[in-house]
Length: 253
Ligand code: ADP
Ligand code: MG
Ligand code: MG
Image (cartoon, rainbow, N blue to C red):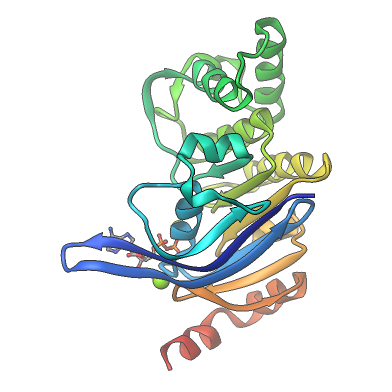
């Protein structure tokens, strides 16, 4: 078993008016084998948490720790974090003109494994994976995310997840921009990933809909830069009925 631990994490971004604190003391422990959902309103800092753990340079950790099996993740480069077993599926996947999906995936896989995958085996793995997420194999030759629809971008993220097969996956609003069929395809991919065992997922969302497809073991309500409430899957059902209002009012008080 592996453990990803976030401890009293404070994160700021630079604004024209100076540094602004976005994360105000986040505590979160995810063991491999567990699915955690973070639910919260827009602007509460969910993506900031995802990017901070993944190592985006825009986010400055001012205090607190993030460790993977006791190792200091924050001291690692983005590449080292990926090699340590972390994966980030972004809310807004970036376009990479001139880099084919096929080359992108192979480069990422090589960086993580320390050696290039055997070509014949790899081409089949890529084709099979694209097929599972219902992307035509012609996508392998297209530039990464360029001209992809919202749903195609998210299904490509899930193809990456399956091919890179990390220990921990942080999936930021996987459900945004997905119609019901694409949501099911993406969710099936996440469920295949966790079914291997010993994998951890942090699923960030503000809708409960995706939790009908991916069953969380733990649900965290995220408001104003910190976790305001924790519970099991029943907490998502309660949020569906009541919304975030109660937590927003408490945060303002
Ligand atoms: P969420 O993913 O929960 O919607 P984000 O992490 O994207 O929230 O953003 C959290 C807050 O941080 C928002 O209020 C956003 O406007 C603010 N923020 C993020 N980046 C900057 C920035 N560069 N300058 C000012 N505010 C920022
Ligand atoms: Mg905030
Ligand atoms: Mg976000």
